[in-house]
Image 1 (cartoon, rainbow, N blue to C red):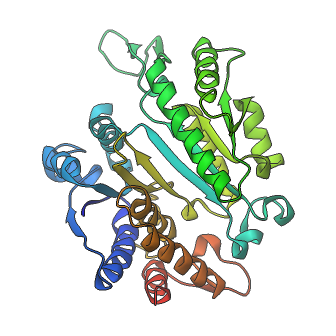
Image 2: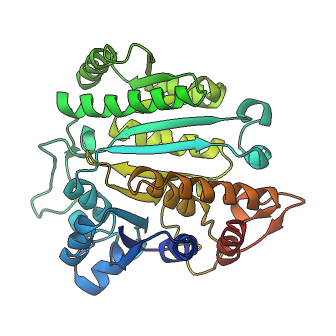
Length: 364
């Protein structure tokens, strides 16, 4: 099984290194993997003149899955947008056909007091956000800005982006959400999909609502409710456990998944998967490159390690290995080990590498 390893910028190399440690431990137990590294993001621009070099894209296309760190570096904020580090992830999504982003928000019992909400509100939280990745305002055409005569951003009269969705885009993401809810129902979850939109204001999301409702007819065993995005944002704070699976568009999903992250104690705990129609995917932590702590050895690698577990489950067909990793993470948390972002009185604060070593040890 070929894995393209793309560490990226900031803390990316540090956290990816710990996930690789875990995968190599599983290799020692007989898991057959081939790991190949590629440059991406700001580091790639510095060395190759592009945030997504052709060699890296070729590597990703040939792989069964991509393990991704993070991109983003303030040194390159003044570049034209198409050259900035963040364009790497957009390019990978487009070229690999990644349309479904799965972001679980799972609160480990050991971290209940680290959540930004009261433990009684979030205890037992286990929800899944399904975010559409290829449409919406991030990719609407035409896109542009009204510039001043010299073409500079400064002094521009206006800027605009268009929001769009096609029927096939909505149908396929709705199917992913309903199938996920069905699988979760078999595991004891409610089996409910909450489709989040802004149909009361935006025609695009009235269309979204109508198409999701049509697709739901094929899944009579799954509940469906519609909710406006502002209400959904409020309910995630007020009563998060009322949700099971949330499906929404690209921009709303971007925002709501980060909000849900804080319910779990730290965004450093949240993995994510971005899948295409063949279930090949890109796996990355939900957080960014965190350049302020890069190189200090204090970043939380657990989201990246858990992303590797998702990779094994969804793209590589190794659910038992995925479960081993998830149980090892829980064991380490039960032992009281914490990185700085989730540290509490009475716990032991460790660095990035030590946390990775602890997970490897917990694998047995």
